[in-house]
Image (cartoon, rainbow, N blue to C red):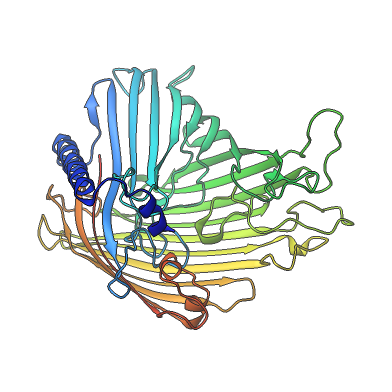
Length: 490
């Protein structure tokens, strides 16, 4: 498809197209240089007293040495995300703008701030900043955040916000993975001390099956009635241990999906009754001194809040609803559940190296245990796990080679367990000279090698295997990725 699209868009001569591409590349390089020059030696926001500009971005290119094709954004991981190693991630940019509408003289003073964050990416893996010359593949731009917040409002320490906002805290950088409480969405909330409460809305736009888009009369496979989910969420964090700053965090959610109705006077379709879900979870953080830490988290979700597979959010409902029209649970996700378990650790070896580890486990069960059963073509269950270790070596203040290894497994339904052993070697230049794994910008050369078992290859479990045409008995069980990338944030 890509080659056909390029043929249709090849009206300008190759020479003219090459000149235009060169001009765009020079423009991008100039803008990047200006931005990086403006950034301080450590990653802080750029701006004036009442305005801040934050920017996270990653851009690069990648090839497969075996197949000789572009594999930009084609992850070697079995889980489809950064869990297991994020060095094959595609191009992505996230600029954020903060306006301090009312700025207090001290942190205890009343304030009002507004923040707007964009997400920009190319869904098809083409050159990120050349949307007019990459075969018609346009970039996607969406709002991640657009909210206003008032703090120290009414009483000291109380803040209230409304709009679209990141409602999340737990993050494992080596897996680019938010866990336990990743509920970014649109709505509103309050925060007071360690307590956070929010009401968030979510719509499954583009989802062609329940629970969001419902075909009420059997003539619209994509659904002709859309439903909107409401999530009531809250968490509380309590610190203990004095200077060690240990803490325990508990998190809960209640999901409500109203019955699908065309309007007053219309009956509720039999396949779209009201549905619900609940989530409970907790995290233990241990501060081990000198920046060392251990985070252990467990989350359990039920009903329509059964999202977990591969690191999914709780509102990304998995599996099919009950399909027995004679059961009380017909059309609902009653009986389904999901478990998430995460261990995230970090250790600093003086000025020699920084170590980070991540272990994840997800198990999801569809609504089969409730009365009735999902269609035989739907998976009944899914399980995945990963164990990952990353070492950033401070060989020189401006040279931080990284070595990373992971072992991953995934089992879909009653299929065979697919596994992968993956190793990445990433020589990294760090212009700021900061001895930290989080120092930016980074200029990286990347080599990743994955060794798959037969089941992973035969089921084409990774984006790389899908891109290179793997299948039952077809394709190599070795995945290789060579690339270069720069990433920054401030």
